[in-house]
Image 1 (cartoon, rainbow, N blue to C red):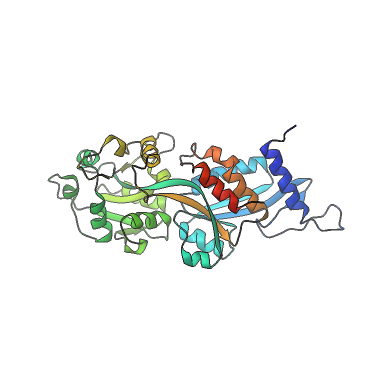
Image 2: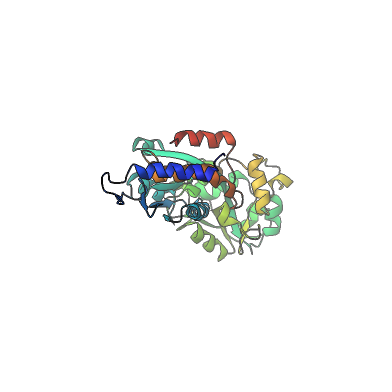
Length: 331
């Protein structure tokens, strides 16, 4: 009889734990640092995996952790968010086993031993307040890339009337992120700069930036997919509007550029209409390589865990991309 994938994975973990049981001492096991392996107690695999990093990947990682723990109830996966920069720093310092990263891994990080695989795809979206005084025109015209460059890179004072082609003289209040993060890096890359080039009032974290925009009707900001859209309704979260990009610069929002709902946003990304960046891949990284229980968790994410990606509101990688990642974490 063919064994199920879950059964095969339990066998792999059994081999892992067999290697770390103290030889010659029946019934005893040797604890190891979090995630580097596993111990056995009462015949069950147990261990702790620590994860930190990008807000963009946090909701997905929480789902993966919960589902993995259903299969291995004595394995604990601790997940915390704090920005991609924190995930990289924590992983390289071995403070955590896995860093969540929502930008490309930098050459200097690779030189320090960063080892990474991509796991899903999402995007960064430009947001404004739901009570923006020119929303009717803005939603019909969209915003051009050059306008965003003028606001965030060139720090040019602008009115909402200039952007939406109305007579409004309300000044645009620009917001950005204070923490080292993939969302800011990704938006900046789209605009031809780096995170430190972005102007605006700096706010910590994805939720913090969303909240700042919600409380300022003249605000413009940006958020990752799952902080811009409500997972339950499929519409922008209460208090926010997602500003469509006028990608072809024709002065109007074409049907395939419309970002009114999460499903439309996902379709635009999949079709390549929404540019990349700000669409981007999301990564998991560690120091040197994924080993033991941590390696098994990452392999599970790239196989069984992919069934939860779309439900969680993310975009699956292509089969070829998944296979490429799996090749890097073979047993």
